[in-house]
Amino acid sequence: MDYKHAIVKIEDGTETLLCNNCGIVIAKGAQHEDREHYCTMCMSGNCKAKFKEE
Image (cartoon, rainbow, N blue to C red; front, side, top):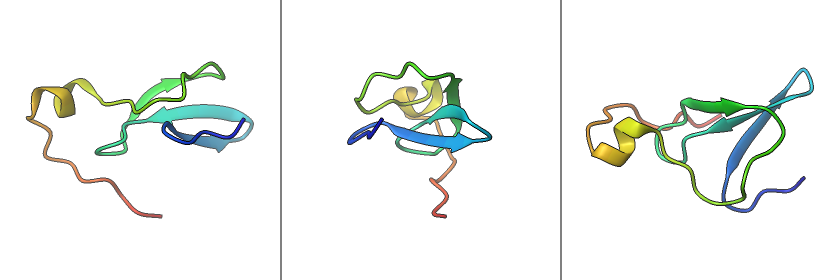
């Protein structure tokens, strides 16, 4: 599936949903809504991580 808003990485056939802001893993599996997803730290404004460009 092509995602336009969600950041999904596929490794070994498993989809992993990443935070749109910092890039940490939010969920694993194949059912992700195509919208922007943020971890709880980013949503609270306390996240110090930066998204890692690959």
